[in-house]
Image 1: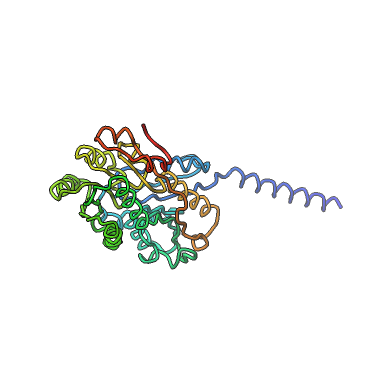
Image 2: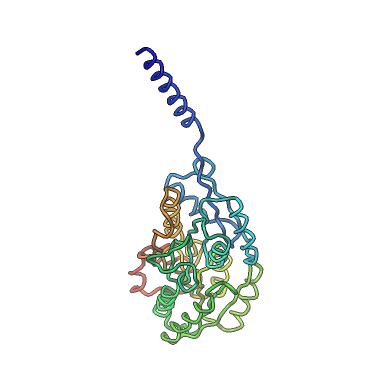
Length: 322
C-alpha cells in the first residue's frame, strides 16, 4: 500500500513538473510576411492588427518586404519570406499575389487585389478557393464604371478622361479594356497614362496635359495609393475634376472618391490572418467581395479649383469635407 502511494506521489510530481515546464516555455508568436510594391506599408494595416488584439513584437511578428516600386524584385522577396518560414504571407496587389503564389504552395497567402483572382489563376473559385490562397477582391472594374458615371453626372461637360494605370501589372490590360467599354457607354473618351515606377509620374502627367484630358481617374494600385499626394496635387494644379477609389485620396486633397476604402479592406485582410493563425485553412475561407461603398466629396478642393458639385450629387455623399 505504501509503495502504491509513493508511486502515485512520484507520478503526480512528475506530471506537475512537466506541466510547469510547458507553461513556462514562451509561446511561439505568429510570423506574418507582408509583401508589397510600395515604399512603406499602410498605417491602416497596423491599425487593423491592433483592432484584433495583435501588436507587432508583442504577440505577433511582421516581416515587411517592399519592392520599392520595382515589381521585378517581388519574386526574390517572396522567396525570402518563404525561407523565413512565415506562417502567412499578405500580398496586396496582383503582382505581389502572383509572386507569393509562385514561391510557395503550402504557406497560406492572403490577397487583396482588384483583378479577378480566378482569371489570374490565384484561386479555383471565389466560393471554394482551394490551395493556399484566399483573401479579398475589390471588384475594381465594376467600381471604375461607377466612378466614371459619377464623374459624368457631376461634370456633364467632361468628354475625355485621363486614367492612371500601372504598366505591366497583372490584369492591367484587361481592366483597361473593360474600363474603355464603360467609358464608351457614357460617351467618354479615355487617355491611358501608363506609370512604370515611382519616377514615371511626371511623364505621365505631361501626357495628360498634352492630350487635353478634362478629368482624372486611377485604376487602383498600391503605388498610386502611396503617391496619392502627388496625384491629387497634379489634378488640383490643372483644375481637373477627379474621382478615386479611396477616401485616403480625398483626405489628401482629392476631389471625390467612391469605393470601399483602404482601411476597411485592410481590416478584412487582418480578419483572414486572425482565422488562419488560429487554425483555419485558406481553402476553407471564401474570397470576399466588398458590399459597402462610400461616396466622399471634398468641397474645400472643389472651391479651390473653381468647381461646383450639383446638389443632387452632394445629397448622396456619405461624407463631405468642407
